[in-house]
Image 1 (tube, rainbow, N blue to C red):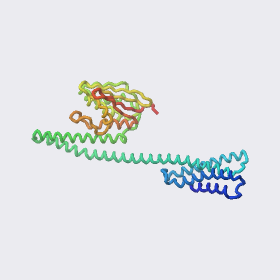
Image 2 (cartoon, rainbow, N blue to C red):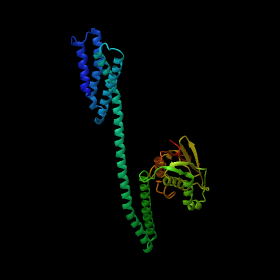
Image 3 (tube, rainbow, N blue to C red):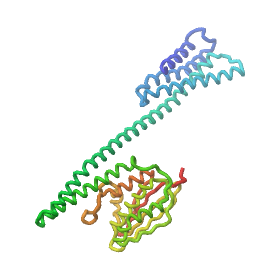
Image 4 (tube, rainbow, N blue to C red):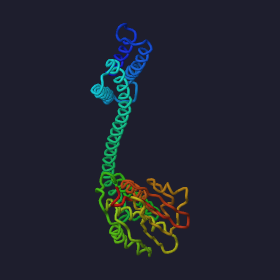
Length: 356
């Protein structure tokens, strides 16, 4: 349609100029009229011909045509209003000029709109592919964890049975302990990966959550751990946010576990505070532990990244990665400010309840 419409304007422009007797106008006026009508015609002809070579998808070509015809319709309507008010001296020439200008303006606007719709379609398809990929990865993670848990449990159980019933030398018993510990750690890592992969798909809808209530529940769950190391855990009054209460509980527990595990030689002191920043709350968990070197502060949020050996600090190496995933699901960010020997402050943002 664009090629045909452009060709018609070029034919009309040439015909009006070079065919004798079409209009009784000076030659200069005819040439000017031919240029005004012919250039839009050439734009439509060339644009329509090159359209398949652009990044615009074929299913949105109709958008360009609609805008082009809409521009013509607007100009015809304006011309009709003018004709009602006054007699037009040369209606054919006026129609050609105005509709040609309207069509090329519509073509430009339609092309822009079609490119926007193309990007929207591509984004939707990318999102669909990512969702399908995430679903497949989640299914794989679940199947892997489910299928691997039982063999690992069986290996660990039989090794412990051999250790209890058989008369073993000190070295053999040590080897068995290593094997049991390895199976247990593998099972812990699989559980962590499963939890990490299901943050988005298995989470509850975000709704108003009282962080004070969530934090009190975490302290109750960790009471024995806190008492064993004689930790001092305090908090300011915490706000109400939009979130998943279960995941926020896991977030606080992971950060408190981390603060207790990497405590210094003195009694660990942990303080939780919150500060409003525009439409979000910035929550901070401060400890006086061993701290983190500046070069390692981003790496601590990677899966299975450990800064210390298992002999010094046991764990699966997925706690902070899971914390980051939970915060991201809530639309926030998490970071750490720390210096070796001066403790660490883990801060994260959560949406306020009344945030738009």
